[in-house]
Every structure is written in C-alpha cells, then in structure tokens.
Length: 275
Image (cartoon, rainbow, N blue to C red; front, side, top):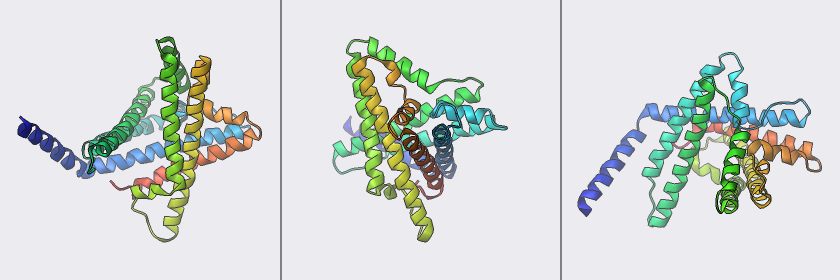
C-alpha cells in the first residue's frame, strides 16, 4: 500500500513538473503578473487622485476593474486579466505540489504559502470574470457582508479577529521582505541600472503594499472588537482611513504612489521572475 501511494505521489509530482515546464503556461503566468500590476497601478492612481482632491472611485479591486471596464476595449482587457490570473493561480498550484524542503513542517509551510497565493489569484480572477461578463460588484460591500455574517455566527468576533491577524501578518511579511530586499530571491536580477531600478521599485512597492495590509488587518481587529462591519471593509477603507489622520492627504498620496510602484514592480516581474 505504501509503495502504491508513493508511486501515485511521484506520478502526480512528475505530471506537475511536466506541466510547469510548458512554455505556454509560463507565458500566461507572466501575463498574470502584468495584469495584476495593471490593477495595482489603477488602485494606486485612484488613491493619488483622492489625495489631491480630484475625486475617484473605490481604491480597491472592484474600483480598478470598474475603471478598466469603462475604457474603450476594456472588456478585452478584463478577459486578459481573467486568463492571466487563472494561469498564475494554476502555476502557484504547481509550485505548491512541487514544494521541497528537508523537514516536513517547512515543506508543508511552503505548500500552504503557495496554495494561499493560488487561492488569492483565483478569487481576483473570479471577480474580474464577473466584470468581463457584464456584471459589477463592490469589494467593500462584499467584505462588509462577509464580516457581518461572521460576526453574527457563534464566536464570530474571534473569527474576524483571526482574519485581521492573518491579513496583518501578511502585511508584516511584505514589509519585511521589502525592507530586507529578500524579494530578489524570486527574481533573475538584471545588472547595472536596470537591476537598481528593479530593486528600488520592489522595495518601495512591497513596503507600501505591506503597510496598507497592516492597516486592513488593524481595521478588521477594530471591526471585531466594536462589532462594526463598516470598519472592516478592505483596501479602500484602509487607504481612506489613512487619509483621515493628521497630514492624511500626504500619507494617502504616499501610499497611492507606493501602490503604483508595487504595480510597476509586478510589471517588471513579468520579465525577471523566476518561473
């Protein structure tokens, strides 16, 4: 039985390795980085627009997709977003299956990390699919609805607090990876000025994205403690909350520029990612 199980496992890993080596999948996965970068650039631009008093929509996924949908040819771009992110999600699934480490706890930690990325890409692809199909949705309203449902469940406050802790922890990892330049582990770093530019946009982008996620995590904790779903409404609420602080417009402007920079980094990663 053990031998048969080992053979099945090895066959599955061989199939995953073969699929990972396919050039079309690699190309589509790189497209996933590009479309994700585009969405972050739009989200950051919306935040910058709000900071300088020029209005704008929701500085989150739904706001970015809405902006894309109303541009000429936007539907084509939306379908490219769907395809690219599904491919990137599939790639992360393969990464999870092929994760290696000498000790099993570390191996499973890597698998969970890669699988979590895959889920995130699939969720964003699903939202983009809704827009590409002619529908719309509000990320903030969806998040509030989920938080409201969780808070009404037994032990819901602790569930929402756990979500906040997870999101905040992810934000902390982003800040850490940016500040310590560990992002270069995922890249085939170019030399000279191109390498320096890649490092700068990566560090600035990761720290800005991580700071925003830390605020989102804190807002989830506040929403749990006050039983107020409106406080835990996602990225747009986090950025606008920063805008209410002393020197809030300057902070919001800096965060918007940082998110745009993270989007640029993802676009650069399209060419230099280790895939």
